[in-house]
Length: 305
Image 1 (cartoon, one colour):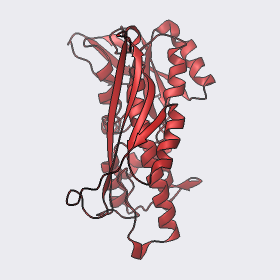
Image 2 (tube, rainbow, N blue to C red; image 1 turned 180 degrees about the vertical axis):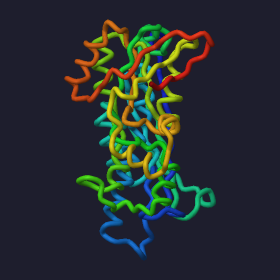
Image 3 (cartoon, rainbow, N blue to C red; image 1 turned 60 degrees about the horizontal axis):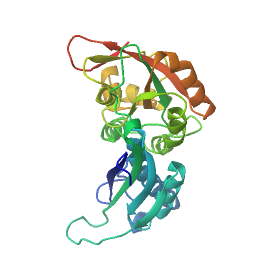
Image 4 (tube, helix red, strand yellow; image 1 turned 135 degrees about the vertical axis):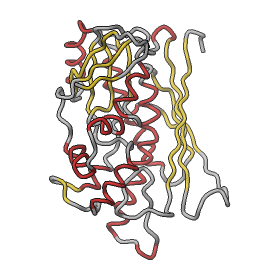
């Protein structure tokens, strides 16, 4: 391949297990019940968990790559009996699943536990890579809606469920708490690539662990602060419930969860309207959530207003 391209591999691993989880626990590590206690509801819940976990495997590596403007070439899985979730994730991401393998390692894992690991390779023109270096004071920040917690903050979520005595089957609007918490993470590749092809995108932040507080500064140069208007979007119901049930203060919410914003794009202020229109036409819920401003400290921090 020509030297003008960069090959960008991303590796991700998830751990699944049966050792210490129950139907009341919801996380990327949710485990199947034992054969002796399996019910139809257990089986359905397990199927959704395994499927969503494998979709998550593709989702997370692709969302990391799109944060650099990378177009994917292929994804490789290292998993057993979970191919459907991975395959559907690849279809959503527009990449090819080129192979996989399994390995048994007695003594390495507790009974019933297993790992899922995968990597994705993409390519981008060197001159087109998005690394945040072009971000400037006055640039606008656009938030793109998440589908839920996106597999982050589940240690706190499990504690809130346990302390509040809430089970996954508890009604939550027209659905249940468990289904809302297990909603698959959005794969942003298609709408974000449309955005990149419509306006110059200066920086992209995938809001994962660390929430809005820690992820946005990672893609913004030192000497610039990120000002977020928390009134520019409505905090989704599941995050309102978690905050109320767990008595979690606002600062911690923004540090742990995406709070309804799964991806943040930085564009020039003059391109804001065009960028929002592009995302809306792509079927996304997107908002002008803030802007970049200079600071005197030399670092980069997030200021919530």
